[in-house]
Amino acid sequence: MAGVDFGRFGFLQIPHVHCYVLLRSGLIAHKKMWKLARVAASNLRQKRWLSAAIPEPCMVHKRGTDILHDPWFNKDTGFPLTERDRLGLRGLLPPRVISFEQQYERFMESYSSLEKNTCNQPDDIVSLAKWRILNRLHDRNETLYYRVLIDNIENFSPIIYTPTVGLVCQNYSGLFRRPRGMYFSAKDKGEMISMIYNWPAPQVDMIVLTDGSRILGLGDLGVQGIGIPIGKLDIYVAAAGINPQRILPVMLDVGTNNEKLLHDQLYLGLRQPRLEGEEYLSIVDEFMEAVHRRWPKAIVQFEDFQMKWAFETLQRYRHRFCMFNDDIQGTAGVALAGLLGAVRAQGRPLSDFVKQKIVVVGAGSAGIGVLKMAKQVVSRMSGSSEMENSQFWLLDKDGLLTKERKKIDPAAAPFARGFGPGEIEGLREGASLLEVVKKVRPHVLLGLSGVGGIFNEEVLKAMKESDSPRPAIFAMSNPTKNAECTPSDAFKYAGENIIFSSGSPFKNVDLGNGKVGHVNQANNMYLFPGIGLGALLSGAHVISDGMLQAASECLATYMSDEEIQKGILYPSISSIRHITTEVGAAVLRAAVDEELAEGHGDVGPRELMHMSKEKTVEYISSNMWFPVYSPLVHEK
Ligand SMILES: NC(=O)c1ccc[n+]([C@@H]2O[C@H](COP(=O)([O-])OP(=O)(O)OC[C@H]3O[C@@H](n4cnc5c(N)ncnc54)[C@H](O)[C@@H]3O)[C@@H](O)[C@H]2O)c1
Ligand SMILES: O=C(O)C[C@H](O)C(=O)O
Ligand SMILES: [Mg+2]
Image 1 (tube, rainbow, N blue to C red):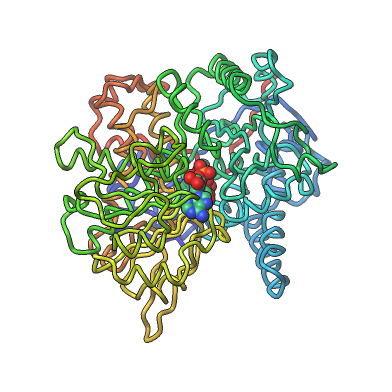
Image 2: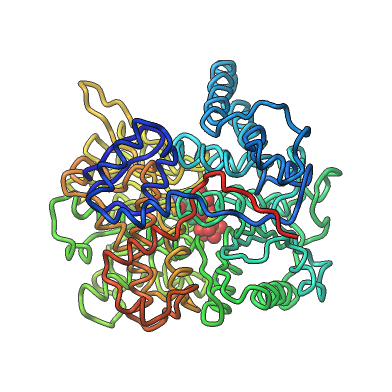
């Protein structure tokens, strides 16, 4: 895209500048940028841009130290003198005013020093040290925190999100200093409707909720799983521009079945086994009612629930509330976009997707979510409502799933293989992964099992015999140690022409002779922010399959043929704000098409209906929050 690159201050898009892009530059007082921005803006809607460049004032009901201790409003040494006078801050800070840019530089310098000083230490120690320094800033000054996060998203997302967030959850009780978000426990039954009013913000747009029962591939971490909603919402702020004053991470603590935690004296959650059945559901019901009583338009993202509750709660609430399950639906959309990319990489038309043989390893919420969406795509492409399954093979911990399986989960049942004509001979119930890969010769091997290294040397070598000229290997389990294989093993054993994706970030692989094996990050972070943002700004009261498909299609068509040929299926994380804008617009347009969009704020359903695609993108981007110090106005 044509534009002016302002380095860490952002990228100014010339062809269709809108406030977000310009606000992204932030430093409009900076002479060089001011000049460049003026040139760009002169051809565009200058008036709107100029007004957007003056930050909105922010009402604050506090004064003095209460402001300094509130990360939403705190500017540290950045409070101008006049504001110090107005807010009773004079004398509470050292006299010199430090600019936002100087504060930014100072933080980045301390971060670099930390990197230098820890370069010989074990990875986990370094990652936790980096998380701590970011977390301290998060606790102190959110404006500066989100600014450094947005500008350095590619470097910082592995710290505040996957994989380090997993380590943080595992060590949560020891790392705990200050609470973040809300905790509703089994002991709060009957109290939730009043508790919800303890949250200080008047409005909440986006909630990420977990019960801690399946945190990444790390299992049941009980209350310690709160790190996941916090990390996901950080991505919402950075990628979707959701105002951090309108986000709410939530932990539903219904106990844990993790024996180690139950016996840990320092464990901070309820030390009791998990609630089950109706008792469990009544807690989730009460929470959902309470939230929607206070904030009827809030969107709830369910995250990292064990499979049985993931599917059950999705069915239970998706027609009543604006909610979705990220592990089932967000993951499916990202995987689908990648699978369609893998078809393009073979030089085939997208319609050939129906001929791809896909082996999915892991029959949990994520694996089945992917298969369900893939099936929808196949039936759309083939124009048949008959659900065709013949191209999919599904394995769980007991091997290949067939109709002979004794106890089969209802969600997995439609994907169990039969034994009739068209089946590959010799593939029995419970066949091993190696047998399946050897016999099926799949185009795609996709792992969502949570089992690190399960795509071993033999399995990867068997992928060399794939029927695809560019076999695709998706090792999507998180965090890093749980990935089904490393990219270097994949390129080494399955061949240099493979397409590779992992759920957690890995470096590209040096294949020698100047060749690079590209590593894609197939992570739901490419979609959930746009799904949430599009749903929010459409004002839809539910999130439909059509809205989710639109999100996935948008991501699938984002990459050029040239990039796809190089094995690049997803855009760089550094452009996540742009992708999210596009995805959000696609979701919104789908909501309008399905007559689900009820409007948001001043923008009503009719206005949304008449918005062009381009205007929708502009509407989305102009509603994205961007961190700048706003003038604070004291209101009693
Ligand atoms: N990349 C992403 O965006 C993304 C999104 C969602 C989930 N995930 C990851 O996927 C993994 C699974 O998530 P989930 O919600 O589906 O979990 P889940 O617990 O619901 O399902 C795990 C599945 O793996 C199967 N499994 C276990 N051991 C196996 C083995 N040895 N061989 C084959 N299958 C085996 C289990 O039987 C189960 O069906 C986690 O590691 C999670 O972090 C990644
Ligand atoms: O959290 C992630 O990185 C992706 C996904 O939601 C997961 O559960 O692994
Ligand atoms: Mg998840």
